[in-house]
Length: 299
Image (cartoon, rainbow, N blue to C red; front, side, top):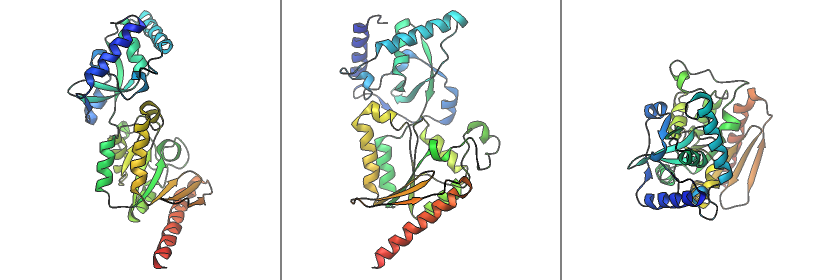
């Protein structure tokens, strides 16, 4: 494997070139995702949309060197492979995996000749997924919520934990009242879109909420990280979504914000911030929005 910066740059450029028109992401079943904990470095492909592969930005060799030292230290101590943070990947056709996050760790492993590295296989939402969801939706209203900051909690009032064996698979705990709120939103014609800065698999989140008897429309994960890596591609996904809906409500811990498409109009509905009252207060705010819309239609 390439030892110098220039040789690795040449290798990377060739990898990107070889992947053009050939590789595309495919979905991976949950069992395979659970069982796949490491992958051969030679089976991992750099993501051409990531800034790591951009010749004007390129790899940060200081970061690569730091990871190389971590790998070497791990081998000295335990005679085993580095077992730190896994590289986030998607399975690809015709073979192997596309790197979503962790290019520098992959590069470090290649440069010292380490054959395998820990991985986390995920299914992300892509533009074609978003287009299909929007084409199949008949709703003109969207509710947007943040998984990390609003819905998943470690303390406070929580929904009952999922029963065995699902509690072994899904470790996240859900804010109390969330299923009732989602049921109310769906009943009033809202598509529900969830956002997270973490690398969750789309189907993992959708299946999790099904266990609570509610359905979510779409899941956008690694927000911010993906937008930074892919530039305009990340922004285009959100444009696709926002252009679909005439009204969007952003539901937070202490505020419901309604934004009307094509106008500068917005309405704020403050919440008390009390966890026990959160879901009911959000429903009351939605009821006000619906009442206002109904009165507008009749005038």
